[in-house]
Amino acid sequence: MTKIFMRCAVTTLLAAVFALPALGAGKQVLRISTPAVPEDWHVKMLYVFKDELARTAPGRFDVQIHHSGTLFKQGTEAVAMERGNLEMALLSMQDIARRIPEYSIFTAGYLIRDPQQLIKVYTGPIGAEVNRRTEAVMGIHLLAPIYLGTRQLNLRTVRKVRTPADLAGVKLRMPGSKEWLFLGRALGANPTPLPFTEVYLALKTGAIDGQDNPLPTVKSAKFYEVTKQIVLTSHLVDVLQFAIANRTWQGLSADDRAKVAAAAKDAAAYNNKNRIREEDELLEFFRGKGLTITTPDVEAFRRTVQAAYLKSEFAAHWPKGLLERINAVR
Ligand code: KDO
Image (cartoon, rainbow, N blue to C red; front, side, top):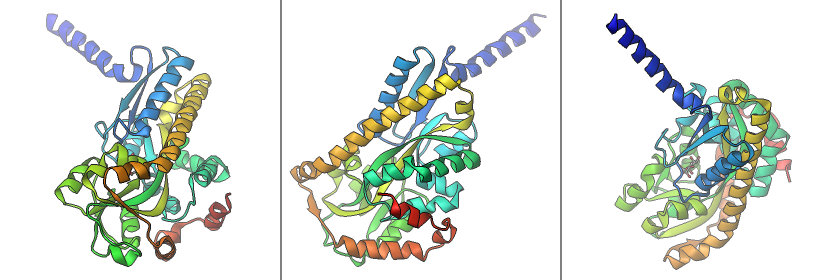
């Protein structure tokens, strides 16, 4: 009798404990996973999101921010969200293209011209289509596009780089998926897959010769401490998507959905403003740290990279007319 009572008590206790993450003592838990480091605007914007929700929907949400890839490893967040193991993340278009191959178009180098065009593309009719399709195929609701920055090459030792041919044999770290590796190859380098969290050490030890990321990331992740050169290739005007699992999204009241969406937009605006400003200011900072900044023949890079994409297996999946529609966004 006592044993049965004990078993019931334990079962009840366990049920209560496992229910906690979802309920969060009556609050909706929103765990957000990102590989970005705390100094990155992407993490800072998550605190803007959290504070804004605390203001507009007090007591309704428990926003938990997990940076540096500590909750989910880079590139595994979308699957975790699809399986109901994660509520929110900052997803790359490469993550989305893995499940929706036609969207590999958004991973192509030298496609988007600048951050202004990028935001217009993703907040206009093209973005609305992307959002609908991502929700239908992946069960993920995209709340707001986030400017990641314009990707530049960042090398361990100084090298003369004018055209893609000058990168022959350079071990260039790229994130670990075929879309990213293709970009590294199209740039003329020898791409090596590595998670973001391992890049600093790999640069320091010489396991890789370089990496590519926007200037604000080179600063926040402190890559400038272990590299000597930045080559201004501007090869990818890059985006992240502030995303929420559809099952979490659909579980919210209409009022809470509106508040989450508004807080996400505020957070995105905060990130975009700061990243764009920093990209204008950071070259001086890096020069001050002793880095050599060079400008290659960007047209040669553009021609080579665009040609590589157009004849790639990726382009075979691109929806007819989408390239032209993206180009037409001003
Ligand atoms: C990177 O690993 O180089 C990358 O810039 C890829 C992006 O898609 C994104 O995951 C980003 O890292 C992280 O948010 C860290 O800034």
